Image: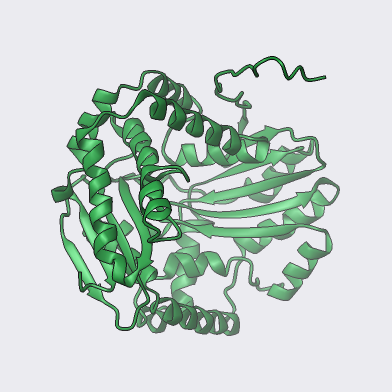
Length: 424
């Protein structure tokens, strides 16, 4: 029984134990990373292709190609593919980002040998049926038209366009792009970036014994070209203030930030920590001030995000239209506090524990750790990243953090985008 006369014992949160992925190559050189465990008779397979939006030659090409991957081959209709996958209790997930495209399959192991060939065939032999393409484009165009009326959608697109002026990270679609894209554009992108391109396979869960043999049979003969060269985007300040009026908007969307760098830069870890202090959790400074104290928003956040070729820092929120000016004032006040005042030791420890708790959550089980490994490989790092991160957390210095805020979070170096009420 719990002895309530004694104080509870508190212990420091430690880094989780990371599973060691079994790594092997198929006959054509494709790397497979297998993370075994979980205790349930199922697994997840992820095909990670170098088919992100930064590689497209035409707006919408990468996203629409990814969306239609499982919508039919020359021998099977979309209905036949999905009915078979559903019948065996499996399901799929598609995702595309600026850097990569991911096609995932979750399946029970007892149906592994049946479902995986269907899944692989659908990816390799996607035919992009004309009728399905037409329906999808009409749906996406209508959805885009509706979203374009939302202040947060407009602010986000404008923000990244101005941050990444000369890089594909800043590209955003316009309504006319939906009429310009063709089925042939998708076929060409699929041919170049899926059928004959570098990719990796990640499998997690209770992994069937015949996995390597099956992958070799299904994928080992694919023609695979070398990886695409990794470029970079030089961190330059974009201190524009861009205010776009939206008539009758009840809310204003605010985006403030700058281009920075990814985890290969010496300042990345500490800048990411600063973003958590500022707006990375429910008790953060921005949330405490602008939501809890002022009641101007349901939520506000700050983040430092790494990309394969760059990175960015941003603050984002939606506030009541008439409160736009006050919200901006308070945001810059919190940034000024970071530049001028030392973070108290108690807050340093609180945020450190929060971050450690988040790491534990994102590393809970083989599926989660496989996802972490996948994202690390995109950034050309491994689980040793967390050794560096742990060392940074253990040696946090309030003076260094304040100097970092002075270096990167000066108001005159930040891009400010407001869409909605600009009468402040």
